[in-house]
Structures are given as C-alpha cells and as structure tokens.
Image (cartoon, rainbow, N blue to C red; front, side, top):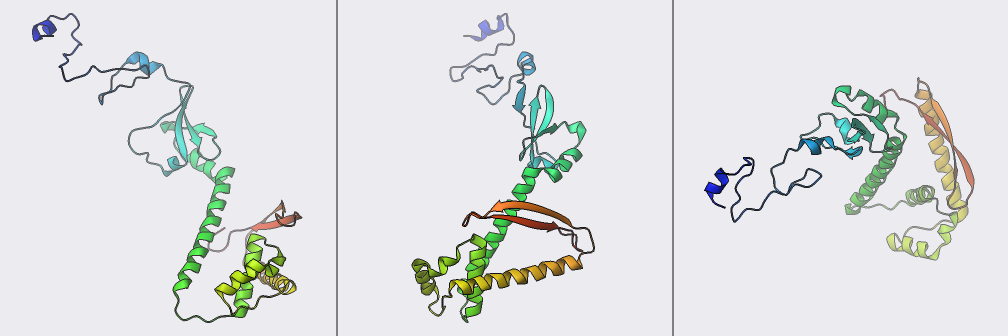
Length: 242
C-alpha cells in the first residue's frame, strides 16, 4: 500500500500499517492485543450482571483490605472476604457501614481467634528454640513435671502416655536426669495446675469493676469422647483490653 493510496482512502480512521507492524485485534470483551486501549461505546454498555471491578490507583481506606468491589446488576457492591456478604460499595456511600460490619462479622471473629492461637503457639515455640543456646543450665525435676502436665492438657494426651515405651525413651534421650512419674502423679499435677489457674481467674474477676458476659459451649473430647460444658467469661479490664 502506497502513501497515495492512503490519502485517497474513503475511511480516514484507517492508519497505515508497515511490513513490521501487525493490525490491532479487538475482542468482544473490549480487550486488545496491544498496550493502547480501544474505546468502543457498544462494548462499554454490555457489562455482565456480576463481576469484580478493580480501580486504578490505591484505595484510601484500610477497610478495603477486607472487602473487594463488585458489580451486581450494574450497582457497586462490596463483598466481605470472610462471610461473602454484599454491602453497598459506592464511593459516595462512605465506608462507615463497612467498618461496622467487620466488628460483628462472625467469620472474621473466628479467623481472629484462630490467628491469635497460632501466634501464641509460634511465640511459645520461638521461646523454646531461643532457650536451646543457653550455656548454663540447671535441671529442675519439678519444672519438667509441670511442663509434662501442660503438654498433656494442651494436646489432650491420655494419662497413660507416661507408660509408653517410645515416649519414655524419647524423654530419656533429651534429659537422662528426668525421672518419669506414674499416672496418678501426673493426674495430681494436672489438678494442681487447674486449681492454680482457677485462683488466678477468680482474682482477675474480683479486680474487674465492669460487667461480665458469660457464655457456655458444649464440646466433646477427642480422646475419651466425653461431653463437656465450657463456661467462658468476657470482660474489659482497666487498660481497655478484652
């Protein structure tokens, strides 16, 4: 195609294409194979009823870390990342209602509790690993017995674990000075820990001058398959911590 033929063309919107260029291909979904977008009014009107929209730039509110913007029947919606509930998501509606939803979202509360437990376990594991490099070490039989009792409580191990040959050999390899206790002794240690923690809890409740919310929950032990009822008390302390 020569330049004279281009000037005499009846369609002025057609641009010349050299031997090293390829024509711009436009798909039905208004996407092109080149970096320059193509504005087509007919494609802009045909939007799906349910789609995720992404805005250019960075959203200002931190609440959008927990929601994603969507289009539902042409209306702006905000979908919760935890419970998938759809709320009004237009920019003119603000984000106060989104913050309020995060405070009462049951799925987010469950995730926060699970993350908190994982952080506690990771912190405890870090503390255990950091103690491995201590040069001066004093063995304490009573402290080892308490840690054994806490392990059984935490993981719901059977009391008969103190008789398991493999566990005894493993404990001896870690600390040959540790004298393994019997089942009745470890049971007394566990009850002693319970009494100590109960006194601590009662002391914290007595110091509290605010209201206390008491809830109950039923659960079944994975080991003995026995049913238990757990009584949980929630309150705000003087430092405004739950």
